[in-house]
Image (cartoon, rainbow, N blue to C red; front, side):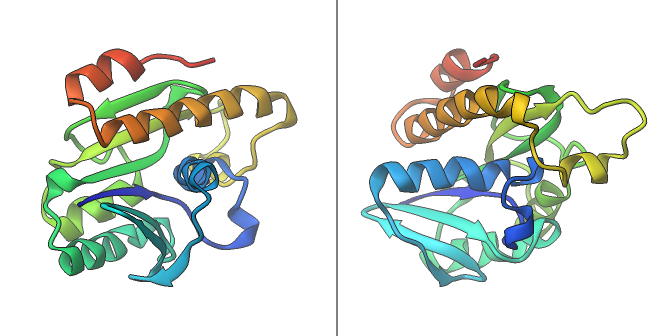
Amino acid sequence: MKAIIGLGNAEAKYMNTRHNTGFMVVDKILAEKNLKLSEKFKSFFVKDNDTLYLLPKTYMNLSGFAVVELMNFYKLSLEDILVIYDDISLPLGTLRFRNDGSDGGHNGIKSVIKETGSNKFARLKVGIGPQPKGVPSEKFVLADFSISEAYNLQKALNAAKCAALDWLKTDFITLQNLYNKSHV
């Protein structure tokens, strides 16, 4: 059993914001597979054979609570989860697989690390930068993508969707070689 977890904020007003990139990637997977979410584990959730998809409803800063609830219920190890989220330090369209590391200032990842007690889990970062000078991080990540960014955003989301699905069946070094680059 494997879990693909997208981070974001569940309220409609955040739907198209940069901080909801993780949700957007998982939504693309669900649309392709014609899967419908229900509510469970403080999240939107669906099980498809041996793959679980999770979009925490706990808000970004408390994502770890939903992740741990899912892991405990299905007896998942850290090796069984992939967390997808936005990364302000990467240019829009750049993907980066990591097997571990710090939270990098991302509160959703900080929560997952705190609640799981480890930083050793697979992540797929989706670049949303660059952050304009003088714009606070909180304001930037909670802003919608601009119309001029829409085309590159869709290319990045499609690449991230493929990357997440490949994570289910491909070794990590191959994933990094294939996807750790710009996709726009």
